[in-house]
Length: 312
Image (cartoon, rainbow, N blue to C red; front, top):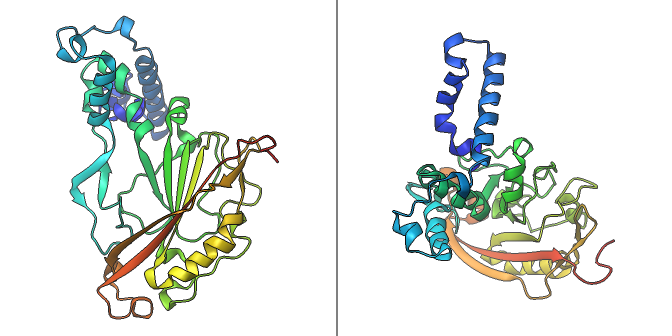
């Protein structure tokens, strides 16, 4: 998705050019040479522009199509989509609507020519949702090390989706490079305290502070925070009570002290049915002898207060 990631397959060749393969350096020197290679590669890619690219007028994409239509085609070609060859098991901890398969982004188009790269390199990251599982996620899930991101990647980051194990703040660690426009936090049925023993749903009044470490604030880039609360359909009234009496009163702050307020419109409600035996285990206290369980989901959204005095 960034200049380094897109060209990772070619990095070995660049490393050879700076003497990595020939000299058999130490691990420390190898790491340094790789950093040099990446830096050089990024500089070359940042220098690409229409003025130093072939105009490609022989291609109907550029000679016949208007830029707006071409951008639509390119967006479809390089945006995130399901990898149908990698389905998730229906009884896995992470299978759910929107996450039935692993995601994939095809970036081959970016490598076809300089002009295609210039027009499309921002699309993959700016249109993608980056899922982060604090626990019980896919074994091959990407590890997004935001602290190592380039300034270009930081600017393109759009949507990050956190699946938290517990609402205790451990999922959120502010770093300067983490500046998304949107954050979604999903509290799964298996995130509630005591769920295996079918305990009643409970959120302490301090939970709104627990969603982030004490004193931490969301980045000033954040335009939308959505929290999805999921539970069993038979616990619907318990969750509705939490939403009506607790969550509606929660307020969050950004680094610029802008307050995030819940939308005045009603939350979004949804239902779905999933397997009852997560990981092949029968959770009989929580699910009885059922093969499937029905879920109830409430999604609340917070946005910046645009009124005068919307900072505190």
